[in-house]
Image (cartoon, rainbow, N blue to C red; front, side, top):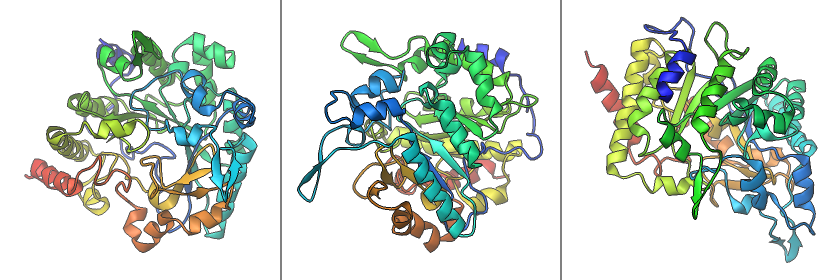
Length: 429
């Protein structure tokens, strides 16, 4: 039912080749022509009211306790972002002294952004973009437009990961922003420095709804009938300034994680939105938060299907005129299939709400956590980071660093080579 409804909402734009110049890369996703340096950050924002409560040592509430109550309306069983170590109020120990796990205010976080701008300029280029990854939904943050305007003042593009429920139900938009869902969508679209990375895992309503809810005992936690709300959100997006003549470079659909439950329809998801003028990115599970459980489900059958899925998408891209054979050979297979390759782990960092600086959102362990920006200047962290060395040591990482987080984990040994081989078999004349 969902796919049929979406066909009515989203008209077919590319029945044959895609329009000249159209590419599968939403604004702010990928930095082209990068040299060694800091161009982008993945970032987290928490409302100042929540930060104040968390940072009060006498408070019984903290970000970890509020995560599934107030910071996100969804209860996704595979949430990669949910790390108690990052969001708890528990004491940590430094040289024998107790220290609160301090969260950063909006003002604190923008000071970090200003440090990033200074670093980029000292390297001889501009700081381009940030992507918001949590915790929870930025669209329900009461400071949403304050955040956007802070980036707008700095001429920085902001990509927002969202499941879009607030853009599809008036009740939610009124609760958080005092306007209808359509009004909220239109207001977001009016900011030219905004892109939305919109979650889409399945055409099947029942399956999709199960991917944003969690059953705790006999009670289903999370938004009910999400698929219906999602369709309305997509309709609102299509009828906004995000789209021009039915085509957009500021909205993309993200099918993530690819799982055993949805891998068989992932190629159709890719085709469906591409042929309707909307970029699509997809990848298997992050190795962080609750995503680690998903990686454990990836058996040999799944891994073989994943190779075939990636190869089919690259063959399709050549057929549709999205990529050329020469481009695929030059860039190599990307971790986000069919889209502009990821170079985040070579030109950027991930700054958490408590100041923790990581390699990227894809992995959370001792090897990928570098330092805390509340204890050490961002420049010092960047200069000493494996990310900077990765881009400096091998310039091809500035184009495509594959996925240092998932490689050998969500992507098995030899994955990219197997995809390239299978792709060549499919395109062999």
